[in-house]
Amino acid sequence: MSELSVKDLTLEYGSGATANPILKGVSMDLQRGEVVALLGPSGSGKTTLLRAVAGLETPKTGTIHIGDKAFFDGAKKLEVPAEQRNLGLVFQSYALWPHKTVADNVGYGLKLRKMNSSDIAEKVKAVLAQLGLGHLGERFPHQLSGGQQQRVAIARALVYNPPVILLDEPLSNLDAKLREEARAFLRELIVRLNLSALMVTHDQGEAMAISDRILLLNNGVIEQQGTPQSMYETPNTLFTAEFMGSNNKLRGTVLQKDGSRVRLQVQGSALEATVRGSGAGAAGSDVTAIIRLEQVKISGSQSDNAIKLPLSTCMYLGDRWECLFGLAGSDSALRAYSPYKLEQGEYWLQLDADKLWVY
Image 1 (spheres, rainbow, N blue to C red):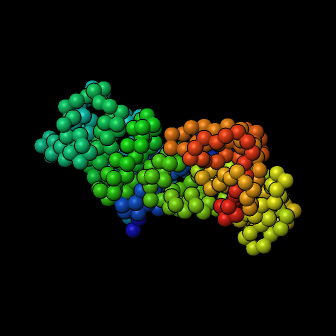
Image 2 (cartoon, helix red, strand yellow; image 1 turned 180 degrees about the vertical axis):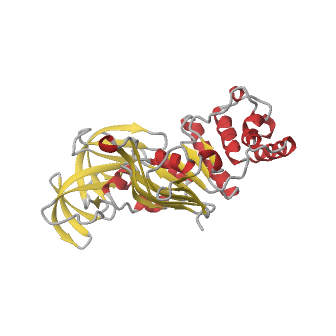
Image 3 (cartoon, rainbow, N blue to C red; image 1 turned 135 degrees about the vertical axis):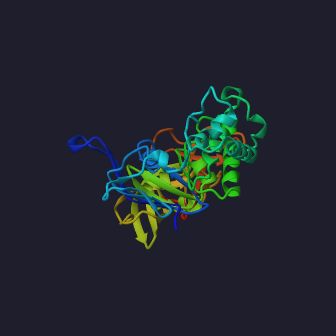
């Protein structure tokens, strides 16, 4: 049985002619010990879905179950209040009480549940130790670093052993360096404690690093879902392909199609490519082709399945250089990675036919 099950959930703001649909029939399941990331652009519905599960938004139709218990059923007019759902929730802002110590912040939910003081102290001590915060129990939030505050928020969500923990952009308040460390800590913690977690993020790298499965939302519906690897390596739609990874987009015309392989006319060059979008690739049709930056090979001599372009500029990224070929912002521009800075001149950019996807 799933820890969390959402079926055909719809939700809209407003009513009648002015109603604004946010969720348009979303269904998903979360298994025990699984981490699912809700990923998508602003306005896609990911945060609204998380808030609906938490009981902070009221859907219009559909059902939400935690284990075998219904928390929302639109047809039966059933809605369990948020405070009775027993879910762990980590807010983007952490929402720590500034006048309470770390121990009091973590134990606050247990106090509301009328647990006796000795049991609260024991549970708080145990969860703080699990998160490496045992020595900080008497400090106040303003005396902690951003990463420590984040762990206190997680400890507060875990202290009463909820069946599901909900994470709303849990790392967004941290600086770039600390985010890298925090996501490794969060993934290790979730695996070690065998948690079931639903996490909202707009950061695809964060979603791929932490989650077991990604649900990519687009305009209130699930565009595609799967493991991080499948979402990155086998995107089914142009939206998924563009959202995941760093990409080059090319406009072309199909010259010939043979099964999933097509021959394209792109910027005066004929290129072999692979059809990924359903129905794409009829001869004579205009199509969009996508290739990841890391799949573009740079050569100083003529190559197969390649486009010749002048180097515009190179940008140093630390472990590599990102090089721009052609005119920035134009349909003819291409980007690629190089292990070293390139000299000015013209280069052949080889595009692997299996990695040049047509939609």
